[in-house]
Length: 192
Image (cartoon, rainbow, N blue to C red; front, side):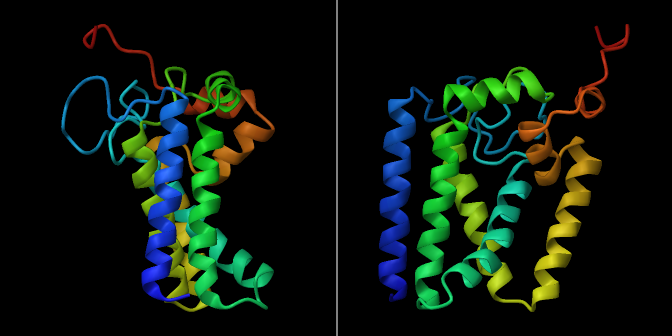
């Protein structure tokens, strides 16, 4: 598959994802109206509503993980097919992540009590982050992908008390102690 066809496939996949998310009622952008392209506070309703938020790191890691998995599963196919397949898988996750079932699961089992799903713009950025991770992993030796994975997991845990691995854990087998640790500290009297 030529680079032009890969790009066309990714654009088509992105368009389908946006249409499905729009049919779910997901907003195009944050209801706050702020044009700032990022939200750095994961404990507010702005999280997942702008282009970028701290969870972009976990979406990069989706691509890091997909690269070797697809290389193994599609080893008989041309490598050029793997990139659009990764895009389709990530778009599928973005759709699933924005279903009421998964949104409620996040609210019940994580510190994301105000989570209402992703804006369409955030889903586009998450898809782009995944593809960046995929392309970066394709360009480095295997240990480069492992190093990137470990580094982004550590940065995420230290920054937002969450990561791809913790996210998977809390969605599949919630641990109350982890949920309490992830929750923001209550405001002090001076902050009220």
